[in-house]
Image 1 (cartoon, rainbow over the protein chains, first blue to last red):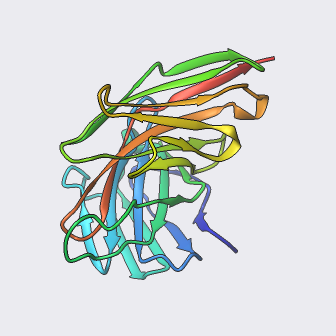
Image 2 (image 1 turned 60 degrees about the vertical axis):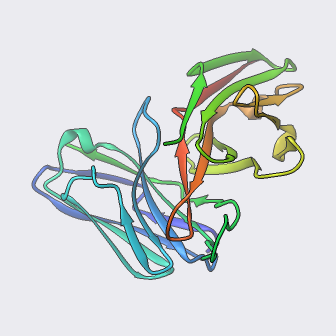
Image 3 (image 1 turned 60 degrees about the horizontal axis):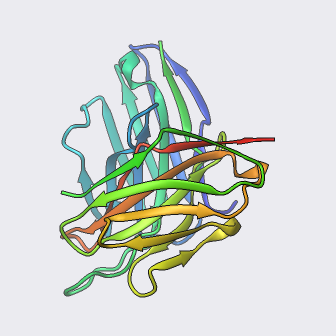
Amino acid sequence: ETGVTQTPRHLVMGMTNKKSLKCEQHLGHNAMYWYKQSAKKPLELMFVYSLEERVENNSVPSRFSPECPNSSHLFLHLHTLQPEDSALYLCASSQVYSGTGGRTGANVLTFGAGSRLTVL
Amino acid sequence: AQSVTQLGSHVSVSEGALVLLRCNYSSSVPPYLFWYVQYPNQGLQLLLKYTTGATLVKGINGFEAEFKKSETSFHLTKPSAHMSDAAEYFCAVSEPQSFGNEKLTFGTGTRLTIIP
C-alpha cells in the first residue's frame, strides 16, 4: 500500500448507528487531517493532528469524534448523525516542521480517495 | 483571515482550446498558493504551488499558474485542453499557524468539462 488509504469507500448508515471511518498513511508524515467535502461548498477542515497536537474546528458537531493512535492512523467516529452530514469525507497527511520563527515551508497535503457517507 | 474565490463553478472548453480557471485570494501575509485537481472518485492531487520566487509556476500535466500580487490572482492555464483534463479544480491559500503548520483554505472548486 502506498499513499493515503481510506476505508470504507462507501458507507450508508441510519441516524442511530455508530460507525467509524479509517485512514492510514504510508508516507511517514507527521500530520493528519479530516476534511468534509459537500457539494458547492469549500472543503471544510474538521480536525488536524500535527506534531502530536490536536487542533479542531470549533464548528464541528460533537457527533464527530476523531482518534489518532499514532502518526500513521486516523479514525473518525460517527454517532447519531443527521442527514445533512452526508458528504465525502477526505483524509489527508503532510509533513510539517516546527520552526522557531518564520514560515516553515508550504504544507503540501496528500489526500486519500475519500469515504462517501450517506445518512438516512 | 484568508479567503479564496474561484470565478465560475463550471467551465467548458473544446478539446485543444485554452484552459483558463480563475482564482483570486485575500491574505494578510505573503500568500502560499496552490492548485489541486480532483478526478472522479478520487481525492485531491497537487497540481502546482507557489511560495516565493518566480511568479510563473509550472505544474503537472502541462498546467501553469501565475502569481500576480497587484491583482491578488493565481489563475490556472493550459494552452491546449485534453479530454483527460476533465475534473474539478481547487485553488487554495495557506497561512502560518502557531503550531508550526500552515492552514489551507480552499475555494469552492471549478468543474472543467472538455467538449470533444
